[in-house]
Image 1: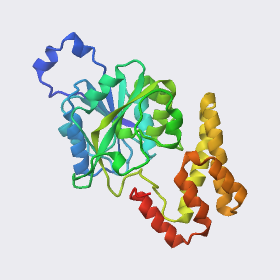
Image 2: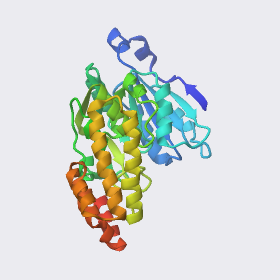
Image 3: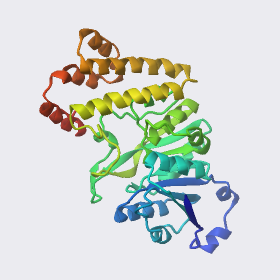
Image 4: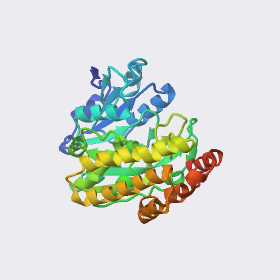
Length: 343
């Protein structure tokens, strides 16, 4: 990795010399930004929103995961003027999970705010989240997001408008809830440093936000701010979404059964020290394995097992009961409806 660092020199001198003790005692927040071949205009909008945060004790760490298409450092020099930044250039493309893991290893702050390259943060995002994290019981804070399109036009007031299964929750013992349905979005979360580092190495079968949220839930309380603090940009290059990578029966089985089977076998090993989660994971594996067997050889016996564990996802049971018999073109239509949030 190649690293460059620039300390901010454009902060007003009077401001820096008149800090009182309360300002000095403020926790440092590390903004962890992963970039890969960013749209320059969207990245600039994101950087401006970071620079305009009302919270004033920040550092920005950027991991450039596109060595063949390096991001122009002048963008950070020009648009990050209120705090320091550090730019790390990866030697090879490793994907967002690895980029965020590297950033998590390097962060200096007490709190870590994970950041994507193409969203816009509301000005009070970090301030509101810091207030919640000052509670010693709280390990992670998340918020809702509004949705904008490629031209900054708002298309939804809440992420729940387009992802019907998401229900925001606050409290203790939420790890089981997060295993199946993740309600924590990476760009809208902030975690305590020790919690984020406990999550290393990141689970390879999960996106970083879900894994960190699970570790946070195991170790304390998750607090959700039920208001949009991020303008989440929805576009054709988003990495996550409903049924990402699913287009037909073949890709459905690959992404929704084979991938889930691999995930829960891995989680069974990673979370073996949590007895209260192992039973849940074991039941989930029984459910997934019965779905896999039914997909190749439908039987009443396997269907009964699927129905027994329908609590994990009732819609999938409804779809998969008939999936072996549904023509592929009809199933493609069902997938389209699901991605639109109608199922």
